[in-house]
Length: 378
Image 1 (tube, rainbow, N blue to C red):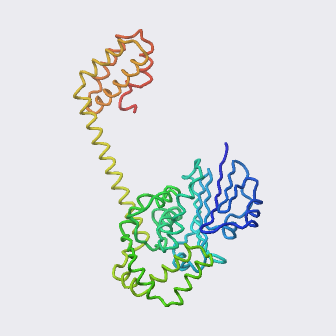
Image 2: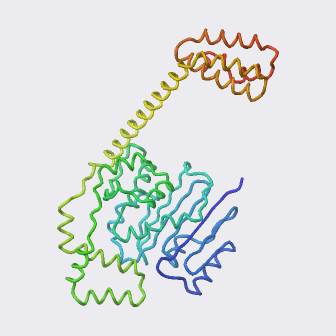
Image 3: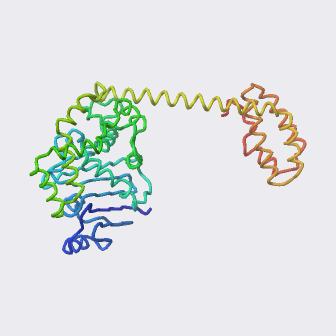
């Protein structure tokens, strides 16, 4: 059986040098390399380099998928652009690795048999690349959503993991967050439970940001402008600028005015998710039962007509008519079981078999549909 592996690397706000392009191209004959990206597809064999080392040396984002259930999304940030201590609070086992050396690396690596299957990797990184900007802007929803599933895989539903910080905005997820949820198979009930503890995002107005910039010392303003002019990645410079502005008195006071709510522990969060799961399943079961009752009511209202239709269809003596007749008999059988009129149904079907005993195609279809197998045989 053919296997599938796909690696994709991406530069953000900059491009690879000629030497870097050559170095990445030399990693594999499968390499497809441009100024801003590289991809490797394998149906046999494997990538010979260390993906995280390649990311750290040359790129800003990495996506990997394999048909046996491995999914990986990793980002590289300049150390000065992010808060390492906050990032570390989301680290969990080998699934969420946060490390800092020459750069800040966020490595989300899920290996889960439930994710097995053929996943076309091309285009996936484009759909989640905005998460890089989210994390630069101190929007920790991507890390927390990943932490939920990592904690579930590591500890099960009775999780005793230290609770990661619940970020705001879990009730207003974007398309890229939903792609992340699907990509890692993040449990929807856990997401819903966490969202119930998550406040709305507090967005600074452009007017407030402009006033905060004007209040900065001229040397700091010039420093940020100089970095932009000299070619530093704009997303990094802007993220640092916004971070500095948010640390000012104006935004600090706004933050303190509406503190985040949080569950007492990871166990409390997971317990609420289980209750929500049970409620959702019960409601789904009740809806299904109500629809089934409506179906039985409709069949019962037209029961006499349906028996006449069965006889008329069989008289047509075509394969299509036999199949349709057996389909109607299945509905009548379900009604008979529901109304506890099983013996009456059996008598009527046996009468049909006797009347059309020479129609072997019909006889075979009745037997194959197991129409006369009683409730104890089901």
